[in-house]
Length: 169
Image 1 (spheres, one colour):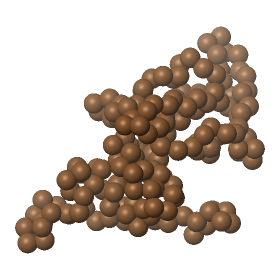
Image 2: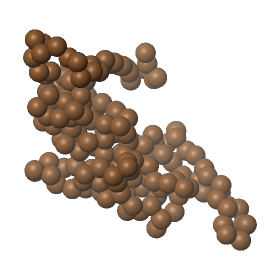
Image 3: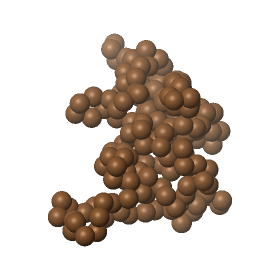
């Protein structure tokens, strides 16, 4: 279906096999790249060389997979959250979390094997939204204005108005 005219959304489901996969079937495609990266490659295969953007859940926020997808001509992006062992590789986890005003945006840029790798960040009241990708810029989306009411330690309330940027929007 379409959210907006010209913005098609495609869904794909992959059934995950258990450990009892018959040996006769041989190894799964992309198995050599690891479980999560292999899944990312499998799920995006039909879009390779299209320049399309694939948005994924934080469960597959693996920098190696985002970079592997880019090599195949498709741009992956995923929400980034800390897991039990901490932040995913290449993510500066707590940067901007406490130091900036609600609505503040910044893109952290790194070069990995000659490729630009981004962590797009936007400060919210109690957290910072972080999205990893190999594409995108933080440009305000005019029709995505919002506000947050903040209560300071002394009980004073104030409203902060800002616009969501792409790709946070």
